[in-house]
Length: 224
Image 1 (cartoon, rainbow, N blue to C red):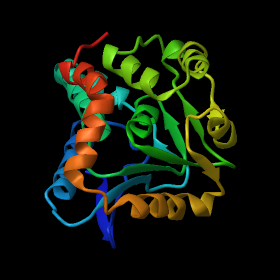
Image 2: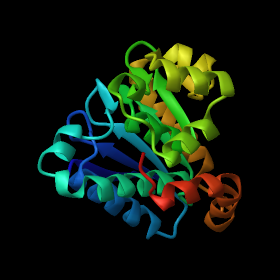
Image 3: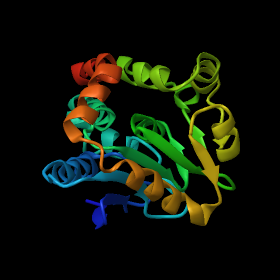
């Protein structure tokens, strides 16, 4: 549902094509299926994710679905979202988030779960708005964000809910670079392609050593 996976040389480009790319059951299932396809290959590979619309990378959980059609599985679904974040964090090929639009809440966390991030400088925000929504973070979410951000940026992002533009996000170390809109995907592809030949077993083992503790918290699926 809303996921398009294409291969460009050694780089798989996963395009999220579901409007604001909010996480509901169909979206998460399709995302995992795309990851299965990439992981099932044996040739050199890297993964780039990008939003299909210029305005959005991902706006996180589909709260309307979770309080409506998905209300009976909301808690188990959140555990599946946490598991997806952990899977991306430990994915055994290089991963780059091409943040071509807003990356809010769990959408921002999805970007943080990647190895590298390229963000649009002139439009779109990174934001963790849970403090203003009255939604405490799950332990795994806190661990993920904390592992990726400097201590002051971690504090500000979580406790203020500030909207952080691309240039500021690069300055604060949230993303690796901020570029003009048309350059986001090409720069992300270039970063991914430069790393695609890395040995998968070694790359995956290194990531498990670096982030396995965080992924373990995510996999526990504890909710607030």
